[in-house]
Length: 74
Image (cartoon, rainbow, N blue to C red):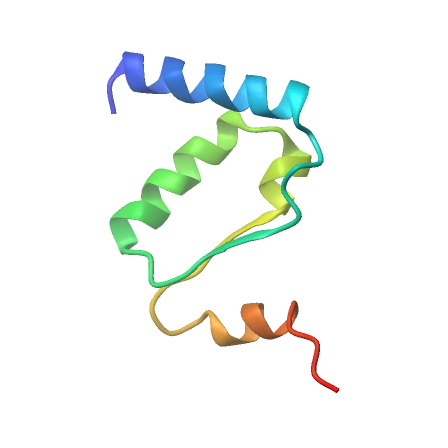
């Protein structure tokens, strides 16, 4: 991750948060690699706390419980 990448992430997240704050209901990323989860740990520090709370990053086996939180079963 270069300084240009960090700058890009900060600028794009700022635009999204300032102009489209409620566009994201909830995002669940499943089957992510350990590398991605490590990168996410760094990137989420640049995002607004409200946005971070709307994003769940799950590995290859721990996502079922998270998905079921958003599935409505009659």
